Length: 209
Image 1 (cartoon, rainbow, N blue to C red):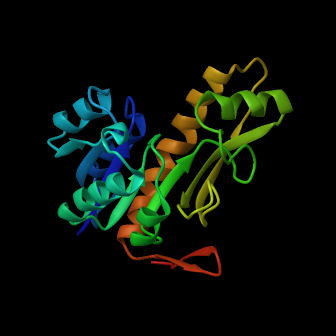
Image 2 (cartoon, rainbow, N blue to C red; image 1 turned 90 degrees about the horizontal axis):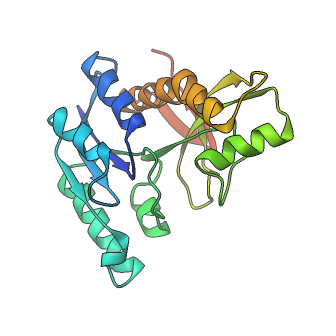
């Protein structure tokens, strides 16, 4: 059984998808051992409490340097025996030090089909605003390993979502979450915990059961 740490910054809808999947037995070889928030008072912490999952808060501005923050973050992850780190709407920068310590053990969900609408500054509604401005007919979500390039890590899973006539950034965001993000993230966690993922030359391979 592998320990999963979920890093959050807001309401925690992706965290809830992971909790629900775990409770349905869809991540049989993993368990959420820690929810770590970037600020106090976010609803994601209440979701963790309701599910009986240990939680903590680590605020970047309370540390004098990035190095001090990195040390504290790594310390909390290692204290929880973390095998897999999931960034579920985590808006604090993950430094090279942390990425290297957990190489190919940090995954992120991004609300587009990478390499479209990704990279620095592309998060939240902006991703969907840009998709609508470009008039794309299909968008979606991507789960990828985190490396030292923003949204540039090896892709694990993707799912397409159709853009509908009359979509707003808000309606598109909701559909991408419901049809893609909330399905892909638990699936990727399950695959990782089952030891079925490997990375070769920047490409993720999934071993058949």
